[in-house]
Length: 409
Image (cartoon, rainbow, N blue to C red; front, side, top):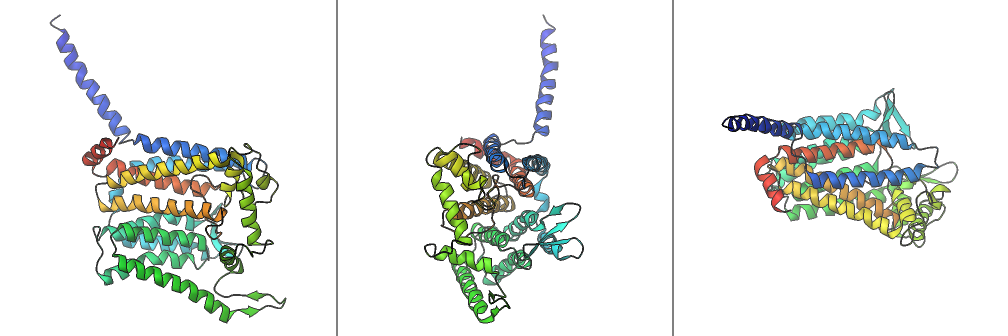
């Protein structure tokens, strides 16, 4: 019997080593974060499966492959210490410029529907989509240098100028939808990063004035083609139509952009409280709803799953935002906090714009719905951003952060 304590004393260190090994292997897993993401992704896959089931132009297996590749990217980035990227503003700026302008390169550049936004490297890739990651890292690194307070007007102009570079590059394609995403990421970085309110208001005023000026200049520079139609030099006709339809929905031309908005509203309204059921979207299946699996995926969801299904999606988005904000608040440094908040800001803008355009509250754009819209590259990018949020949780101020988060549960 005297030997038993010695056996226990030898077993205890072995158990401690095993626990330590498990902790190193699975660093700081955030269970609420993973649960919300898992449910949201599965929900999105079900909606996409139903939306593409009878459409030969889309492949559900490709969407599933995008999710699988995204999970791999998320795990790798989660294990990577994001703090190694702090202070690499110049590097991110150069990478953004090269990435966004790469479709203009001869041979690999691809022009589709009037926009040079793709490259062909054995398969077609949209660099501007992947640049969302480097834009977030760029803006986060710029604002992290000011420690949460940006008072000097010269420094504000410098920071704003750097963050506008990706937008100017993407507009050479042109891709206004992605450009707006870049602008909102920059706006989030400025607000969260502590820029003074008067600077932000002046910037907003200048932005509105620039939009008005573009329309005014276009009216002066427009010219008539041989077939009698008017062409504009700064904005494409469809871009003008989308804004005009938004401003005057009652008098919208139902043969073009106004038709898209009308069909979107019909799809949402016809879903009722509980919807028609999966695979029963008449607007999407019969082709009345353009780009149903991508731009108008929310309409398919609302028609098939009804008001309850739409509210369930919004609840999942709200839960994701809350969990991410808690991670941001518990991050150990400004750079980590800025990364998480820029990602959250981007997702909020995409959600509000995509759903808002379906119900006529926002202009129609090609901005997809996070984790729901069809697109393998889009899924990989979103999973990579989840990886950065996980990296902030796992590596940022390990002791204080986890204790603070646990105290809120």
